Image 1 (cartoon, protein in one colour):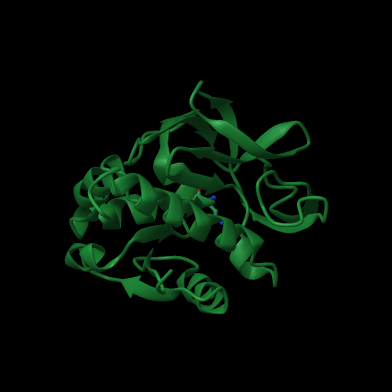
Image 2 (image 1 turned 30 degrees about the vertical axis):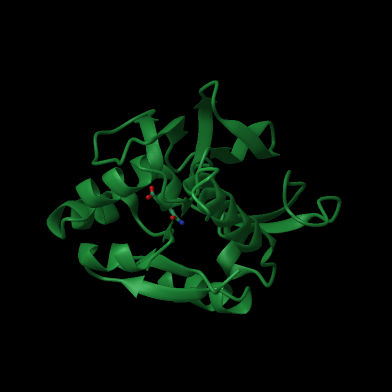
Length: 206
Ligand code: GLN
């Protein structure tokens, strides 16, 4: 497969770390500042940061509608932390702009103030070497309170869903780009190969 280009939404948040992780996994990462650059990409990462800020900036820069449309048409997307919130269809509390594409209900700052940030070893479904725990970094993280029927749960922590997938949409409540472990990014790249395959209808000669 040729080197895929993945856009990292670069309005606010942990952009550089995702770009570095993408390079490590053999993809090309580009920091996206303008919606017109989305068309260069075969996949998108919405990083962690502050979801109300990211949402407002997405509207101001014209990203919200454009991303909604492209992801709605099947462009693979991975949202980490604030990116998970952006992709959710419902929030437990508060009123802020969302993409509203994934059939999940998110609870912002779910772990409360006393555990602002923490690390945990998780067993995740679908990644390479799944028996080897993934060291997950949670920073004022959300969790997924409810999942719709089309959503596959890939990881839990303390009985709460913290990683899930629905078709071409992947979300994690934690930050894999802050660890040395690239297995989730590699999983996302494999989702891209699947999307490419689905695009090529049988009989079209590829
Ligand atoms: N608490 C942030 C929010 O609500 C998310 C934190 C993060 O992305 N690390 O948007």
